[in-house]
Length: 308
Ligand code: R5P
Image (cartoon, rainbow, N blue to C red):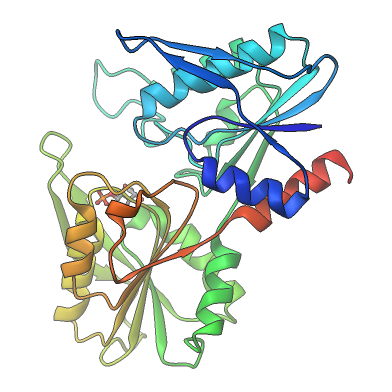
């Protein structure tokens, strides 16, 4: 087995290889003046099982193309199988048609990956549990919730004084799972509206709070991803209006588009915990940010899959 990394998150790939005590291989990459990319695998990979690490993070289209070129290069060079580790799956929020005339963008991405020859895929914290059904290859779906639970316990937040919050109704399944891991920590969910045309967000009301005392409690907001940061900011505002105490944010995928880091730093949240499924450049780090690594979980899964 050989581990390769594309350019999307080399830092995570290095951590995974380190956990496994194996070398990490990088392809030769050349960008032409017109931005076309040439990819070349330098090692002999005939009959090898390959693990390729390439999350489909922004710039999503470039990273999808690079992943596809890499899989093609590996297969043409004789690789027996390619197991694609893509901790963040780009286009996952476009898994169905919202309005007439739209493409099912995620379906197109899946077709591309399957046609170029991906044999198996690993993803983290998918937006919908239905996504694995769209694939025709085996899927490994991991979650960062055990990592979050460990951190919440380590911080001493499982002290009967915390409430878990999903910032939208779509995250209710996730929050229930985390509550179970944390010995039935109470949870509520926020009803959120997003205008599909403008992207504007409204945090409308807190659902499920009838029997739960929010005032003065520590609020732990948990979501699959932070993109522009609007969801977290609006959710925090609504919670504050309802008397919640300190607010902590946990999100698996830190997409951090637009001015999300500034919004989050200036928000009323005390801390923002993310994982390293998405590479966050140093210039997007901010004082309230804490990064928890998914590398040990991915390394464990690779060991399981390859029996070593
Ligand atoms: C949406 O349903 C997701 O779970 C996230 O809440 C959303 O993608 C976050 O986006 P933003 O940070 O731009 O509000």
